[in-house]
Every structure is written in structure tokens, then in C-alpha cells.
Amino acid sequence: MGSRRPAWNHSRRHGSAALAAILLTTAIVPALSPRAAEGPRAFTNLQVLAPDISTVELFEEMKHVTRALGVECRTCHRTDVRDFASDEIEAKRVAREMMVMVRQMNADLSAAGAGEASRITCLTCHGGRRKPGGPVQPLTVPADVR
Image (tube, rainbow, N blue to C red; front, side, top):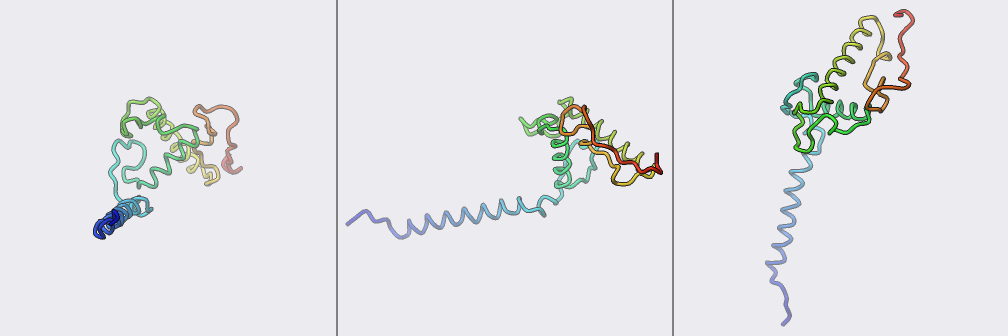
């Protein structure tokens, strides 16, 4: 007689693998779906962004900032300890001030009758650089507003 494994051992091993696959699928797939990302989530220490901002909107906003300034999350956030609410890093305070400034500039432009084409973003002045400088994106202001 050879060293043949009992049938119950073989099916038990495959059953465990199947169970693990099902558990992973039910845990991971919903977490990756856009609908799950839209669910309610309590973010803490939001001082400039809307307190009811969705997860998708928050991540889109943060992606815009990182691309426009050519930085990474850790420039403003304590990613080493996963404490995104922390205010320890000075760059975060500066970023908030800049967001308020951009919001006010866009409100002023809008009140003056400038259209969506005149909208200012971080990219307008930063152009992918941490510190603004060099040529900036041209601002399109309608002639009747000047």
C-alpha cells in the first residue's frame, strides 16, 4: 500500500480554500466598489473641506492637490502613523490657507461675472511644483469683466 491520503483530507483542504476565497471575495470586493466608497464615513479635523464630503470627493480633492503641487500625502499628513487628522505638519496649515484663498478668488471672479473658464485651482500657480513660481497658467477673464 502506498501513502495515499484519505478522501476526507483532500476535500477538507479544497473546502478550506473555497471558504477562504468566499470570505476574501465578500470582504474585499465590496470595499473596492465605488458604492462602498460613497458610504457614510466620519472624517475628523476637516476645517476647510465640507464636513459631509464623501470619501470619493475627498480622495479626488487630495489627488488634485498632490498632482498640482507635485507632492505626496506625507507632505501634509502623518502617514507614518496613519493619522491624517493630525495638525503637526506646518504644510497642512499652509495648504488650508491656500484652499481658502483659492475659494475666495473664485468667488470674487464669479461675482465679477467671470465664467467657469476663469476658475482658479492649485495648478494655476503651482503647475506641479511645491512652491509657486515660473510661468503660470493664463487666466481667461471675459473682456466685459475687465
